[in-house]
Length: 237
Length: 237
DNA sequence: CGAGCCGTTGAGTTCATTCAAACAGGGTGG
DNA sequence: CCACCCTGTTTGAATGAACTCAACGGCTCG
Image 1 (cartoon, protein in one colour):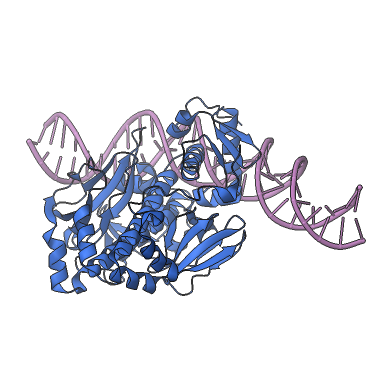
Image 2: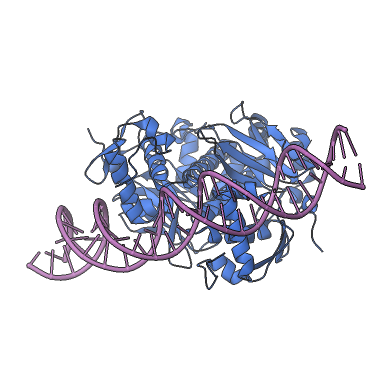
């Protein structure tokens, strides 16, 4: 009934024109040949970003967060990577960024950027794949901007839930398993943990969602959830 | 002394490994050969996004905003494009997006996506250029996320000013000409216009910036401006 | 069993928003 | 030339929302 975190969205690739799996085996071999595959558990870093812009990463299974630590000690998650999501490291990392695994047994492939580029030059198909990956990354960032641009915390959390439901399931479903803790959600949405928790409580009391345990969410009223504008949600508690 | 908006940052290309100007003339000709050049004035749309993901855009001079209109009528600017910035349209535009010019006499090049891809296949160098552009776009989005992730309005506005100063000048400078109205800044930072105006006033009274007219900004105390955390700024008025 | 992490709830404060009004500048038409 | 309008910008007052600080319960793991 409830999907297990580590098995979520293994085969799904949403808007690639040339998804990894549909390409000729020979090309896939080429990309794989330069990859380093790592398996990590929750809390472990994939790479600590000293060699700026040297690697590209692709989550095979599980999930990872790409975050930055601000001078004040606050953390902002810039991207949440699910299976088949790519992270092209920024050409210049303005501050210290980290890629960290959020669920156990997460598998990540690492590609040296120079090798990818060399491969893209010799094999244009791979170049198109890389383009598609990059467009995906832009798309994810735009969607995050859209979520962060919401005015109220409830809207942010609601949009986050809908987006995660889309991303973690191939079929349109109203159930989702949260892959991250409240703290990670807070750092992703630029809210405090308490506000995230309170928002979920409000959405639950309003009948927009239901919770089975802290991480199992069922979307009850998708429309009101995405329109946000507290359409009749009791403001108190 | 003060730079004119339309002449800002015409020749600058920050972190391309293969900037448009450094490549062999033959390749540039190829990219230009599929481009449609348009000149527009403030408020005019470049393209209304019906043909989803069909075009890529590059601002040659001037500036443009890429925004989305939310169901509630609110607008969120997803990207602010300065000269040499690319906008690869999202593979799927989740809602209605618009690319609109914000300063007069803005020149934009439009490239059909299919043609770009065909060109990238036949000429790998172009493929690398496209990759670099896409990485730039991701980088801009991450920086916007970083700004939107700030907690207070003053921090957002401060970070915005510093970022724009970086982007609109080749040399490190403390002066900048705002290319956008307060309304656009508000829609970019997900704040209300009044809050943007108030934040600027607070920063001015705190001695962090000085204003010569609504659009001419001089950064007086860069350090306090980027650290944000209202380090001694009078909270009142 | 205690320690630590995660999640929730409460109380008080701070901050951004909304609604409202006023002002400046650029343009047009009388 | 001046009156007028329109857009853009600023400021005020009051409301509402999120944050901080604090405490507590549940759970896992050593």
